[in-house]
Every structure is written in C-alpha cells, then in structure tokens.
Length: 254
Image (cartoon, rainbow, N blue to C red; front, side, top):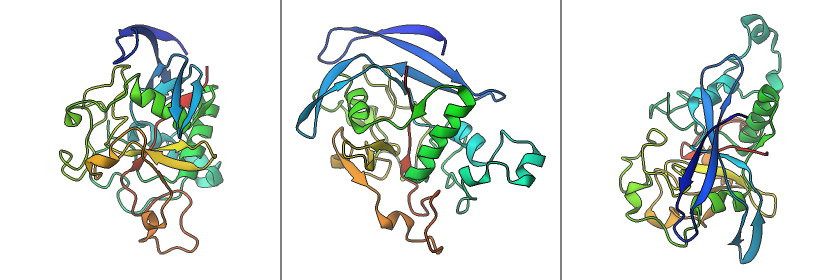
C-alpha cells in the first residue's frame, strides 16, 4: 500500500494522534477502498481489557462498486465465466435486485452472509497480494469509538438509523466521520465482525435500527429470520433474503 496522506485528528478523550491513510486499488478496475491505520491501544470489550494492534480499516462500509466485481465475476472474461472458473468461490445470483433499490454506486453492499463476506476477503487478498479479512469485534469497537466513552451527539449527524434514514440505506460517507475519520461505523448497515468466541456477529446498527441498537457494544449473531423468504433447502450460503440491513467493512493486516 502507498500512503498518500496523513491526518491529524483529535480524539474525544485522548491526545491527538497521527493516522495514516491509504487507498487500495484492485488491478484492472477503477473502484478503490480507502483505508485508515488505527493506532495501537487498549479497550475493554465484554468486561475484559484487550490490546489492539495497528491495522488498516476501511474508511467506509464496503460499497457495491467493489463487491460487484467479486460477486458478479466482473474480473473474468466471458470465456472464464462460461467455463465456471472459480465458480465455487463466488456467490450465486441474488434474490431480485441486490441493492433492493436503495442505490448502487457509492452505496453499501448489503445482504451478504458471513460466509460470503469472508470469501470476499479471500478474493480481495488474492487480487491485491495483501491480507484482507473481517475485523474482530474488538478492532471494530476500538475504531468505532475512536477514543470516545459516549455516543456522538446528536446521533443523527453521524448515523443513518430509524429516525432519519427513511427505511433505506444512504450513500456511504454522507454523515459526519468519527474523530479518527471513519464513516458509518454506527447505522446505515450492520457490519460483520468476528466475536471473541470466533462466531460471526454483526455490530453497529443499521438503517432500520431504533436508537438503543445504534451503539458501540450491541452485537447480533446470525438470525434464521434473515433468510425466511429463501425457499431453498438448504438456505443460500451467500445471500440473506431478508437481511438488507447487513453489510461489511474490511481490515487489512500491515
């Protein structure tokens, strides 16, 4: 990665820290992923103090611009698509319009299962030569808080949720960033993370969440209700038929 800027941001409760920024390019494609390197620090999660090492975390939730390259095999030739190259590692076709009509370019990719999110990270790692993965819940909360002990106020300036989202996602980065420069850590779409017990859980709240669920500490594991409309048996391992409020954000190890 090539660092193209450094940003001095004052944390809500810490001394100012210099945060590095970078932009990840996907060979052969225009969309990029903007990332911020979090500083080393400590945070208490689930009643236990945890040490967080510096890692690169995406500035925004993953957008359709990038996810579609993987999901719809836009990085392959027509011949490769016809032959089914890498098909087992790619999502099946989604249910109806994948963006649910909310918006595509610059909007959060949504409705992917935890498996789909993990497989995307594997694909992105192969494409870029970097190690991408989902954030741990500790890394996620550390970046979401950005040194804060309380929620930002007014919440509607920083998050899309039940009170202001009009029951749909909004373009990423259209609310104020937190003190470290991350957008939409709260609201817009819930984000897949890896819990301390290794389960996949979502965090942060989404556009349909009431205010109590839009905070740093609420987690939700997979719920079968997120696939109630899926008539297949077994259910799709790639898409959530009833989970348009679920998205993701990527992490890259240094």
